[in-house]
Length: 446
Image (cartoon, rainbow, N blue to C red; front, side, top):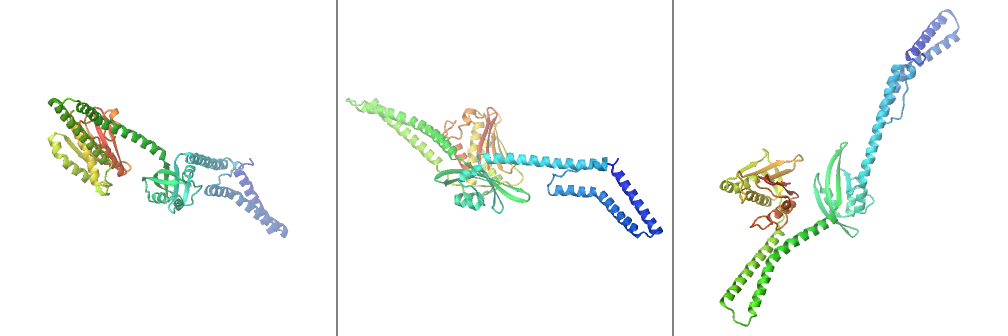
């Protein structure tokens, strides 16, 4: 019963009333001023104790709220001495504090988990704020730059001026390749930037990955493929030339005069050698053209108008070959930074390939070509060239972008290779998706 708030308050009020009555009685009926003074003092103390006793809950509640404000959840509360209702209230305080402690513990665990990933990932990470102060630099970045710390981005000038300038100009989603020399070691860094805001502060996170080894490996593979192609084409021409030359040499070394048929064979052999030599020269000229793609001159282009020009160019061909051509364009303009001449060259090449696919040797019953312009969810423009031709099998689809690889009888094999090279110069990509007997989709991403 003593642990009940109401009972304790009731006892204090009875004591207060008793003291008031005693004080009134002594004041009216006696001259015991000392007793009256003592009773008045006790009365004041009892009133103060009652106010303090009742106000304790408010103080505890204020303490609880201040603990939340200053993120101090270590306090515990007990209200069992005040009865069941207050016991439940203070128990709720304790449960809320424990919940906050659990959340903080989970946050610390997640922070340590993410910190461990950031420190051990095989990609350098650099994060800095809008004042160029570095707020994050992981262990891999320190190894790449041979720097134990960076106070701000300008310290990158001590590593390489080009690296500093590239990182500063990178915008959200941009990718760049940078060559730098650190302690006499050549590094080819792939950079990508992400911009974000946190607590109203702007940050830029840049990832740096040294791809020098991968590039060397891919370069070696590319050279091996190119050498195989060149060797194959050159041997196809040189072998018959060498064979004919040997045959003519043996005929000319004979002591007897040459007969008219033998002279005719020699003349035919010389013509064959001449023809194969011209074909070999044409092949090498084609290769030279492949390596001399002009640098793009960028300008802001409405991609819809560019597609309309391509459609106008092929309109007579579509009509002549009875091809159902469709162009799907968005209502609003889609602007891209590109060289319109080079991109139109890519589109012309892809549309010509689509025409040959649907109206060539394996002509489709209902040939159809679709030229579609759209935006992805990340607002990147995409152009798709779709046909319902016979498709490309898996073995060939992995080789169609290789120089000189062609499935056509009269093709040079450089069209798609040139097209992909042009898209890469625009920091874009050219990809293909195909299914046999279903059709093919070429996708240009900017």
